Image (tube, rainbow over all chains, first blue to last red; front, side, top):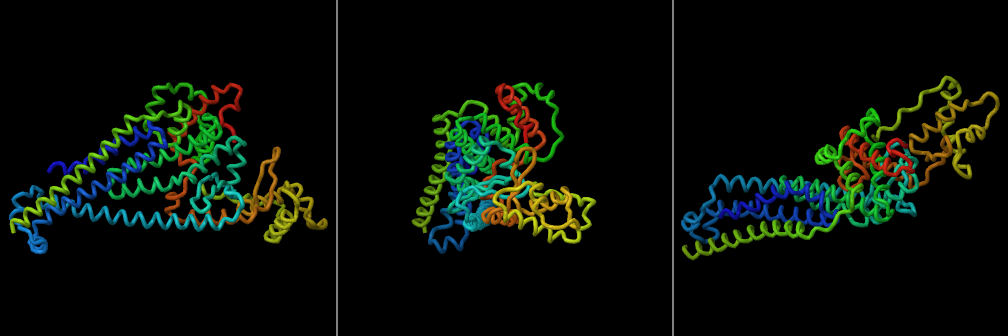
Length: 314
Length: 149
């Protein structure tokens, strides 16, 4: 019976592993593995909650009369306390509501994006937005658009513009918003998966960065462009004197990168060697997800068998 | 970050300017739309018709043009030490309206993939140190890109 709790524990493990995995895996593979894994784990944990609820609910006289099975047999075999069944039921209801709310919000946002993208009738899929903002984004649609502010184009040289456009183009052609949406929905169903959703949002950016690096053939250029734009767009800070930059040793750098936001990590990743494929890690992730699925399916089978025995005992 | 720049300060010679700020904006926009290509503020000033009573100072013309640029009606391009201006095309106007519309949605970030997310002060410091290293490595390169722009 303890197996039933396994799908509830594994998402916490996935949450802990997500950020390190996002850092070492090839970004494209990481995006696929983490988003599929998040959805699978969320499904399994929801199934486990449903089973816990069902075990507790099976004791109710109303259900046993409806299902025509013996409540005595269920009670004798049932180790799930009522309180846990009730908590699981509430958690499941909360998860279902959270998923529905998030799904409809995302669907509305996506529909709005498609409408706006269709309203832009330029020939090019790059649209220049006038005004003083430092802004660049990919707008999903048919066709998708890349919107860049003219102020930002002014500040970049030709190579920087190529890197920027290639990055945004990768988001559009890879339909990256779907991966992010899937992972966010999984996290809505099970908040323990929130770090996985954040990791997917990061690996999507890395995927696009690596694409831009492949298009321009220059990883350092992409790193510099990201850094330049981030510093232009970022909150106005007092500029650090150059002299203090030299004292950041590579070890303190690594320590601060571990806690840093996505932009410095993206830049640092581009300044090191391109990521390799890691078959063993990928296999380990698949095993964890499979374990959750097996546990959920196994206990579902147990419940089914128990009800059949109870029906025979009626 | 989406805050438009504060409107340029009214300069002292705005006696005529204040009387007809709207008219002047329309006139400048008309001149730029009629022009063959982008114009500098100096070009615009030369083309503004009018006798001696309507002599506009250079700074007045720059003020009007900046105001039009802030409104998103003019696109700006760097040219030498200054800027040239051109009226924006239809697609860009739609884009700027759209970005206003999207800015009002709180779920804006959910489907748009922005090039960079926000930076904390720590992140900015870390970023500068990373970029300084690239700048040093490329000895003949353009130097620290953070110091450009």
